[in-house]
Every structure is written in C-alpha cells, then in structure tokens.
Image (cartoon, rainbow, N blue to C red; front, side, top):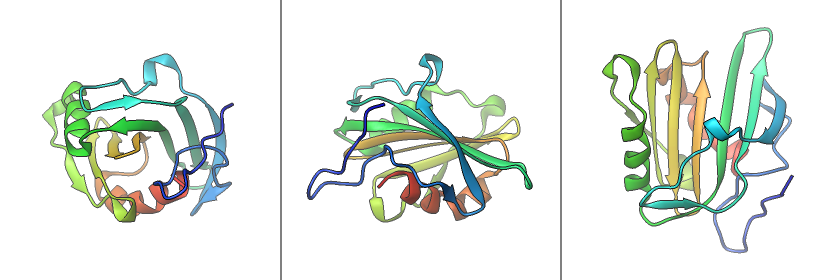
Length: 153
C-alpha cells in the first residue's frame, strides 16, 4: 500500500499510518477503496493518489465510521464539494448541512438520509468522504473535526 507523506510546508495528508483509535472508535481496517466507492474526479478537483478506505468502530456502542480519501489537486474546494454532492441524490431530498471544516480549512458538508450520515470535504490538497450509519448530522457537527484531524495528518 502506498504511503502518503506530508509535503514540507504543505497541508496534512490522508494516509498511513492511521491512528489505532479515534475517541472510543478502534481502527478495524485500512484497504484500497473498492471501485464503486471511489471519489470521482470532477471539474474542480483531480484525485492524485491511491484512494484508501479506513474503518473505525466500537463494538460496545455499535458506532462506526468509514472514511475514504486521497490526495487531490483542488482548484476550488467549495465548488468541488458542490459538484460531488450534486451527484449524490439524497433519499428523501434532504439538505446538505455545512460543517465547520476545522483548522485544516476547506469546506465540509453532511447529509442524513435513510439511517446514515454522508459527509464530503475538500481543501487545496485533499478530497474526502465519510459514511456513518450510527452518528447523525448533529453528532457529526461535534465529531467531524476530531475525525478529520485524526485521519488527515
């Protein structure tokens, strides 16, 4: 598996080594992203590296989070997120909620639909997607920055 390293003076990178745990969640696995879950290139971003999927879970609380990401060349983080969310038609026509992207910047949004929460984020050097069947949008408002800071380093 390719390692993605931080560039000197650059933004954090998404890649191994991922932390063993994030809060109460323990890392279950890291693997290359399956084709049908890959984040597509768009007019405002181009994926540059191998996309990885990292899954964290806690068996006691049944919480789990899957995060997909890779380095990217992003011309406009907001437009990249808009393009990605327009392609994901949320069941029930839900609205994407803006989230604080945290100190890493860029833009982040989440949508709760059919018992799961979906989030996209982008900054100048990365595009990511998060899926959790156990945390709603409001819980993600409280947890997103912690999760992102842990997996993007």
